Image (spheres, rainbow, N blue to C red):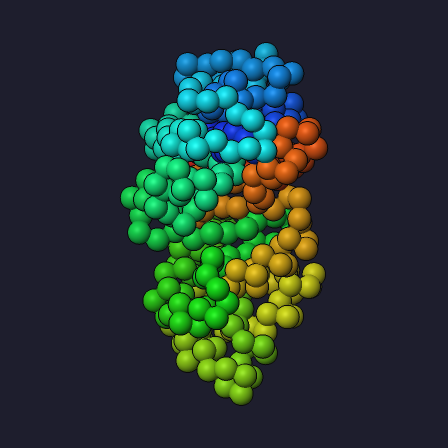
Length: 330
């Protein structure tokens, strides 16, 4: 689809003391013609040398991109100091996310790409009551459950449980959670990635997928029955597989997505394969949402060293997902 026919993606500023503003400018320099987007934030927070083009509406983003980074201004209480997050700006960071979602929900934006935030800053100074971006976006989208996917050309992987201690995983890993996760993943591969018959590989929780109960009961007691039940519904889904043999090159050719049981089981392989190119995707929302797979990087903010590759991939993937949704409804 030619870029001139695409609605732009809404890119949030994230924490303006992080690397979000500078990688937004770098992304515009590289993909403005092929993956249109606009930045929502305070123009004062962009690097001093940045070329910016103020817009009043997303519809102006395409034309504005010829002159500079399209900016939909959102005034913050304070200017930002790279590397030093501001308590006064915390609520505005949240407000920008809300504004971007509203634009996506209204159809003015193709989707939302979120720059990194500091959850601690938002919790400490703006009363943010969500574990992170994903849960807040689910609330804005009116859905009870959403799923985190990490995506790259080499691998798409989903952790069933996310930011909890490892010792808490077995108790959190219920049949209900796994069924919900797998159904959301299956539906999203069809709607957002255009995969007509998704092939889902499921990782076991324990070494050797439990080895018949010798190394843990969860694989046979919880994971396997869920997989068997969903196969009866027509899903192409494996039984629990030993996680240590799922991610080599030949194995990855046999599935479209791997569903892991806990955070590091999912993130270690994709960060090994595509450390700078991985994209965080939220599945199950009524709007498209992607994000670069890295944090605020306060330690290098303002230095010009930040790599925009993951952000660029996130913007491009947001467009691909929006295109797939549009094609599915046409």
